[in-house]
Length: 138
Image (cartoon, rainbow, N blue to C red; front, top):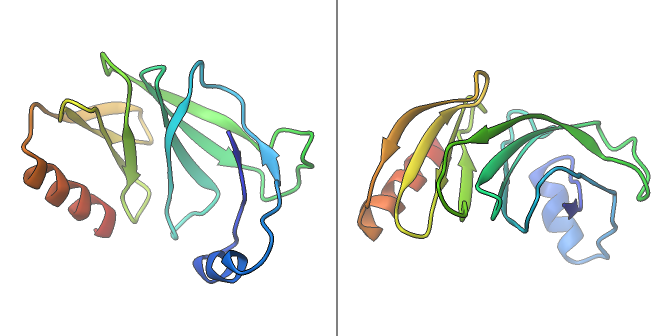
């Protein structure tokens, strides 16, 4: 994963009118990264989902890396999906993640222990949308 790191959301909007700079990379997924997520409660925690059927929980090192070095490390991998993970969101308190597949299957994860706490199968698009919103904004 290559990404730009922002201290807070106001820096994100400021950077939209400026040049983005590569701050570092994270290595760990075995296939394409499909989504990344973080929360304002702890912006040094980053989640990434991938076509390798996993979600990685990353601890960023606070921007001390150079573009040629690792920008953080993987704390754990969340595994259990049987297909590509399309999307991941994190709760505002950073305790839970919701991951989804293209077929409407979702898993609710407790991030600290790495366990699935709930599995949702074949949800309709409206139900899926509302569930993602509730996790993101709560």
